[in-house]
Image (cartoon, rainbow, N blue to C red; front, side, top):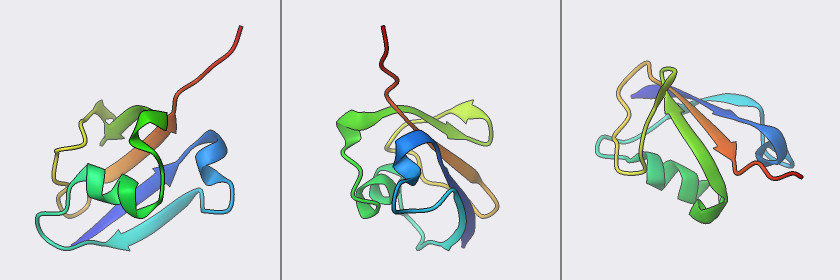
Length: 74
């Protein structure tokens, strides 16, 4: 099944901004983050179709997953 994965800020470094992925059934958002070699502790916001989501959620065909890092500043 095909989904769209969008990365933001420094998660794009040496990766991509947006890609279409073909994933297996039962794949979770956490599996996708792990496959990108992104430490889950570095993830600040996960959005699926413009709504907050969690690592345990399984994307469906046509979903758009956006992964944002924790934002720091002062």
